[in-house]
Amino acid sequence: MNNLSRKIFRLTRPLFFASILFAGCSKSLTTNTDSLYVPVAADATPNATLADLQTGRTIFINSCGRCHNLYSPDSYSASNWKSIIPTMAPRAGLSSANTILVTKYVTKGN
Ligand code: HEC
Image (cartoon, rainbow, N blue to C red; front, side, top):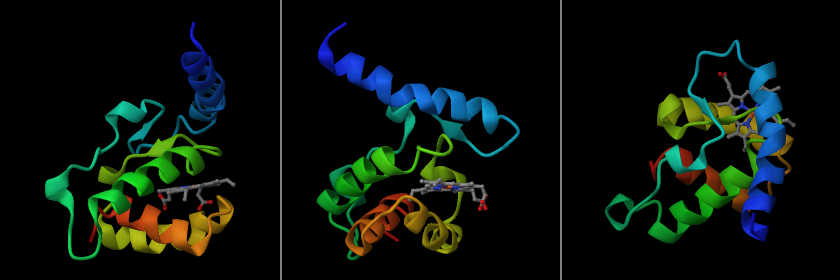
């Protein structure tokens, strides 16, 4: 195993145990970050550049899977996300700038 895969294994192990804890949830929860929406240039909106969406994705992956597996952005509408993020961002200890980027990512720039 190279260093990166060792690191990924170490980072994802808690997610695996969290998946057992939250196995009762019906929403799309995942430890497979490849399956999460990957922004492309055409996804940029007046509200979010491609770089915003990409940075938001990284913050989301690094911060939002500590207590439960990652909820796919596709699991909720943009307006649902906008009511969920204000509860979750403080739990994840996000700065206001990073909260904005995560919001842009999960709402796909809406
Ligand atoms: C400190 C632990 C913790 C962190 C970090 C955390 N969450 Fe949560 N999350 C929870 C708990 C506990 C619940 C269960 C429901 C509740 O308490 O609201 C939850 C529930 C959720 C739900 C389901 C809400 C619903 O109404 O169905 C979503 C979506 C979610 N979290 C997204 C996120 C996102 C996005 C982040 C990163 C910004 C994040 N969470 C970070 C603890 C956390």
